[in-house]
Amino acid sequence: MKKVAVIMGSDSDWPIVKPAVETLQSLAIPFEAKVMSAHRTPIAAMEFARSARENGFGALIAAAGKAAHLAGVLAGNTTLPVIGIPIGGNGGLGGLDALLATVQMPSGIPVATVAVDGAKNAALLAAQILGVTDETMAQKLDALREEMTLAIAEKNAALQQKLQEKRSGA
Image (tube, rainbow, N blue to C red; front, side, top):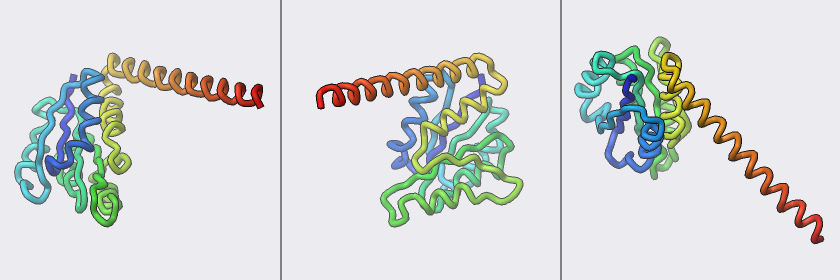
């Protein structure tokens, strides 16, 4: 199975990125997590992206806040799928700056972008990408969706029960 890279622009992004790693682990997807900066270590980020395919990666996840150029730097140096996680942070723009920097890529250099702080969805999207050619992964994702469907049905049944009890007791 191909690996997924989880790249953070700063170690302070870890609390936001951790759900991506946990999701990859729960799906038994091999991964590597690293701190690299588009601005402070641009050569290391570029070299990582350029060698990612030959190093066994199938998708790259890039999490960055503020200027958020990490996903773009990686995408500009590989043809592997890159998934951007804009980090909200405590800045005055609440992640809007990171969202716009991640999603506004020039034609020819796509970056799939999830919601601000949407690390779990980034991991699930990476799993779906791997699942295109990995039937076992596709089956795991199908099972996960079924679990979500059942959980919602259970929550709805509990709500209906509560509403019925209020109607009966009122």
